[in-house]
Each structure stands twice: as C-alpha cells, then as structure tokens.
Length: 143
Ligand code: UDP
Ligand code: MG
Image (cartoon, rainbow, N blue to C red; front, top):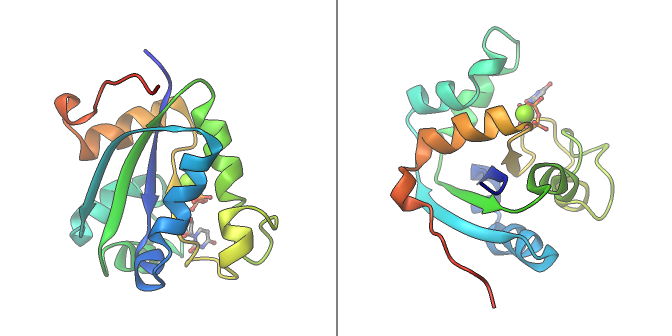
C-alpha cells in the first residue's frame, strides 16, 4: 500500500482563514488527497492525538488549543509523503521555521503553528485510524 500521512489544519488556521492556503500547498506540491473531515475534537480526543506528549509542560495547553475550535483532518497518499509533508509544514516553532514553509510563512508561535503532520509510518497509521474508517479513505487514480 502507498505511504499515507495524517495532516490536521489546526484551530488557529481556521480562525485566521488559512485553511485553503494550507491545503493548497499540499495540493500544489502534487500530493494526493484521499480523505477529509471538518470537525471539532473533544478534549479527550485531543489527548489521544497528542498522547506521545503526555506529561510535558506544553501538553495541557496544547490539548485545550486543539479542541478549542474546528479543525480539518486530512489524509494524503504517495511515495515519501510523510517526509515531504514535514518539509512543507516546516520545523515545529513558527519563529524559527524556514520561510517558504507553512509555519515559516504564517506562524511565529511555538503552540499556534497551524498544522499537524504525522512523523513516521507508525504514527501515521495510528493517527489515521483515530479519525477514519477504511472505507472513508478514497481510492482513485488522478489523471
Ligand atoms: N508544542 C508546544 N510547545 C513546545 C513544543 C510543541 O506548544 O515546546 C506544540 C506545537 O503546537 C507542536 C505540538 O505541540 O506542533 C506537537 O509537538 P511536536 O514536537 O510533535 O511538533 P510537530 O511534530 O508538530 O512539529
Ligand atoms: Mg509531532
């Protein structure tokens, strides 16, 4: 099966009307969109998304932030999609992310950095399963 990644457009992006800009960057790169859901998470669901960070100082405010407003949850598919997506996003903190990346161009914050992307095939699989049933991921061939 082709590699997949979970990309979440976070609440700050929805508030700032940057959803289209952010999705557009993945699309224009040529990545293949295979699933999408616009939704608001409960705090419990947000805890699950960021379970790897449980216990860290930024965990609770991060979970509150992620569940504070709607998000757009998407799945993208293709060879090398995880690493390519991480480059499109930029490094974690907006203030030091490279210009040309989403975070580098639109964020100067640690927490409010607009986008989440899976960081490995294992976390991608887990994260995708949190949000999508197998039949919600669409199989198609782009022209
Ligand atoms: N974060 C934060 N403070 C920190 C580190 C991370 O608020 O010191 C937030 C930030 O929103 C980040 C998320 O926690 O996107 C998850 O952190 P991670 O290290 O997994 O960064 P990412 O994979 O998103 O680049
Ligand atoms: Mg991460």
